[in-house]
Amino acid sequence: MREAASITIRRARREDVAAIVGMLADDPLGRARERIADPLPPSYYDAFARVERDPNLQLVVAVDGEGAVIGCLQLAVLPGISSQGSSRGLLEDVRVATHCRSRGIGEQLVQWAVAEARAQGCMLVELLTHHTRVDAQRFYERLGFARSHVGMTLRF
Image 1 (cartoon, rainbow, N blue to C red):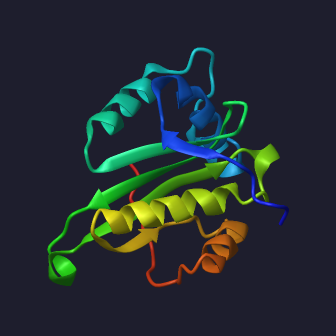
Image 2: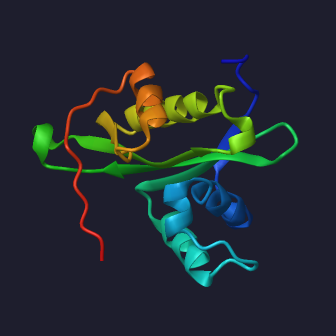
Image 3: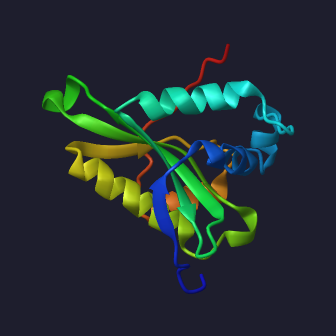
């Protein structure tokens, strides 16, 4: 890995949605799920507004020194009854722009999310990654995440 890139992590803004969707669509799994068009379908902006209003969700972006959005993730803080009433952090949609990978940006994003979850009283942070994303699995294991559950999905 090269020297870690200098980035700023901030809450996503409406004007970041196109860049976020572009990163979500930038692999075979994402291309099958996302719809890239100019303009983007309104459903993306409606979803952004719902995320922005929810106090338990934070959609953040990594921005380079020139102001370009080059990474993103969503942190959900889930209150619960189990584990003595503790909350858990759930990481979703962790992405780094293809041309910026292997520069420590994903690691900085995940470390930010872990610190934020801890600051919000979470007792653990968990995530799901598709079984075909072996590089992502190695990345998360390198950051201290352990394989602990079997994920299951029911799509509609």
